[in-house]
Image (spheres, rainbow, N blue to C red):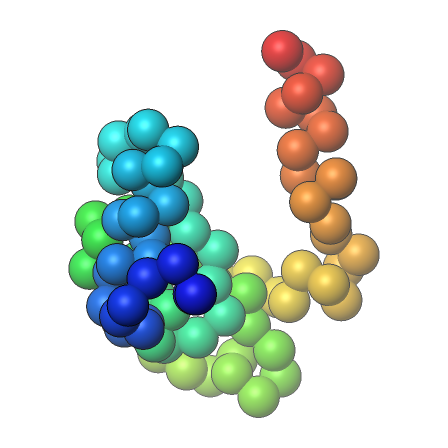
Length: 91
């Protein structure tokens, strides 16, 4: 968030990140946990997966454009290593 001058729901953070890594927005998937973040991802033209908690489970994420809604990843012990290790192994 410190790399951009506009805060969410502006899509600036996602657009800057996408430009820095050099991929098309159609290939980006954002993982967010709030309506504000979802709005930012959708405004950037990216797909968005919402991780919800018990306090946000009933929010209308699908109506706002989320592609998927899943329980909080930390509660399922999902880490960046568990996400990216299989991708690295496949080369």
